[in-house]
Structures are given as structure tokens and as C-alpha cells.
Length: 182
Image 1 (cartoon, rainbow, N blue to C red):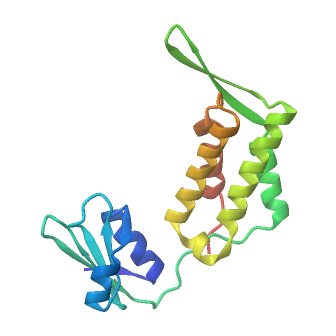
Image 2: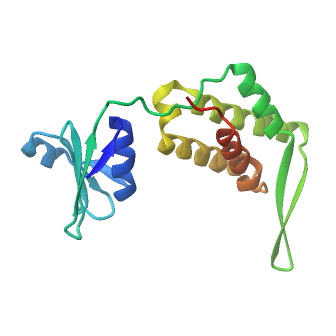
């Protein structure tokens, strides 16, 4: 049995076992409680039984995640928009450009042009606003990862020659790592 301090944490644990789930409407209707199946392997699923999540794997293993709401989850501190603005401004000062020569990848960090700075700032600031939005988001490692991944994907759409991992992913991860927790 695994213990979780709240429903969100229990879901995050269940999603580590079965990462790509979707609600099974028919099974949920028949069972009388929500059932979520893996989109990759329909034999992997978990049931939301209220006080616990029951994870059932195709290997035959069952894992119960008991929800014990005795503790408040750890939450990143709320930041002001001014603080988020400063972080986004720092992130947007430089860019890593990926170049290819003789079949080799050579990355070069340089100062951003005004247009690049504007794009990187907006993507970074938007991601930071998302990371700062509500206690559920500030407590969720899954939401955090998805927001940062999305920022990396977006930068590639707006600046294709940019190495998004070094330009925005790592700086956002560092910002979260340095974010205070309570």
C-alpha cells in the first residue's frame, strides 16, 4: 500500500504507473465508480474508489494508493507578477542556437536579438504564470513538467533554429528549483 497526502498526489502516483490514461466511460458506468485505462495497453487501468486509487497492471499486480488527507501538500510559494517578470526577463537575455557543420551539432549561446527576446520572454512569462497558478498547480510535479515541456515545444515553433532545451527548458527548471516551498 502506498500512502498519499491528497487526491492530487494519489493521481500523480497512479500516473507514474500508468502515464497515458483516459476515462473508460463504459466500464465506469457499469462499475459505478470512475475507471481510467491506459491508452497504450487497455489491460492497465486504475479505479478511483474515493478514499483510494486501485492501480491494476496487466502483469497481474495491484497497487492501492490510500488517500490520507492529514497533511497539507508541499506547495511552491506564490510569486508576484513582478517577480515572474524579472525571471522571464533574465531567461530571455540569451539564446542557444543549434547549428550543424559537417554532420555535427554545434550549439552557440549568444545575446538575443530584440525579436528573439520578445518571443522568449512571452513564452517564459506565460509558463511562469502557469506554474504560479493556484495551489493545485504549484503542488503538482506533473503539471509543472507539462508546462515546462510545452514552453520548450513552443519555442521550437517560433524560433526553429533555437535549442529549446538549453534556451528555455533548463532555465525554467532552475527557476522552479529555486522557487521557495511551504
